[in-house]
Image (tube, rainbow, N blue to C red):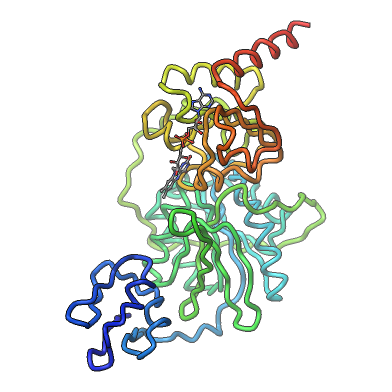
Amino acid sequence: MSIKVILEKCNGCKLCVKSCPYQAIKVFEKKAIIEANCNLCGACVEVCKSNAIVIEDKRKIEDTSGYNGIWVFTEQRNKNIASVVYELLGEGRKLADSLGTYLAAVLLGKNIKDGTDKLIGHGADKVFLVEDDLLKDHLDDAYAQVMVDLINQYKPETVLFGATVVGRSIAPKIAAILKTGLTADCTGLEIDLKNRLLLQTRPAFGGNIMATIVCPNKRPQMATVRPRVMKKLDFSSSRQGEIIKFEPKNLSSKINVLNFVEDLTEKVKLEEADVIVSGGRGLGKADNFKLIKEFASLLNAAVGASRAAVDAEWIPYSHQVGQTGKTVCPKLYIACGISGAIQHLAGMQTSETIVAINKDPDAPIFSVANYGIVGDLFEVVPVLISKLKETRCS
Ligand code: FAD
């Protein structure tokens, strides 16, 4: 795609300059100039009253009619299927039913066929099962190769991945090989039934607006979806499904795994925790996370953090909650010294009960909190800790 200004028509009115969210347009000698940071969003085309800006789309429009089915990539480690896979199957079930098509899970690995029952029990009509020695560990290039071969053969209309480290790494590889679109980090999926399009919603512009993205000319439509956003279906052993075995051909990898080192920074996994105690910049220094850790351990909770605390290197990134960290949905989320910036809320506001401790009564976190304590966390948290200890002793 390319954008151009028809100079004869441009009258230098600057409406395009005001409309551009990327500040990619300048007016020089009463003519608009589009700069390199333009991302072809089309906002300027819409506002230009003299039709002086045009976007030319020279891409070939593909025949998308032969594509069918909603697929979910099954992320697994040591045969443990990631819980986001079941969430995607729950959402995929709704999408497939509204389109009148099938829902499939794609399971890659070695000695993993036991996983097929779980995938069918959680909603899949079909499981594509691919087993090979080389697929024992997750190797991006080998996994991507198999996914591309499967997609080329069976032509699904949509393929969904968890927006996890694995999903965020493999999905762009596959999309690039297939030359199709990929929407990262979706928080909502719907179907435009008339055009059979996947409406992919995700936060944009630093989380300040929600954008809905479509992929009209290419297939499959691909998206990564944030964990803990979609709802799982309850497991039912009565669900029936078909298992399709696929033999990979000429499988190879440039990666040689020497060793795996377990991440020991998290005792309780944030995304799976029922209770999370998070600390922010209000803690003042790294050492003060001890207080949060003590509070969390008494509640058998995971420790979370705001990006400010992570950026200050008070705690590793694996603890970050929010738009560029993890999305969590615990039963109880306790925010200590966190202001409640929109990017933090994006990762925790669906928690069942939110408790905020902040000395500023106007902190935005209180607008999403079920219970708010206005006070100094260094006074409030020690009181809560000693009450919890008392309860344990009695
Ligand atoms: P602050 O905003 O500085 O708030 C500190 C709070 O602590 C204040 O409300 C203050 O009143 C309170 N406080 C201070 N001392 C005490 C005390 N003694 N007792 C009680 N309260 C006290 N942020 C995230 O968290 N996660 C993300 O994933 C994320 N992604 C981002 C992505 C983008 C593209 C951008 C632009 C920003 C992102 N941010 C993210 C950053 C976000 O905008 C905020 O800057 C950040 O969340 C602020 O962290 P904070 O609340 O800890 O710090």
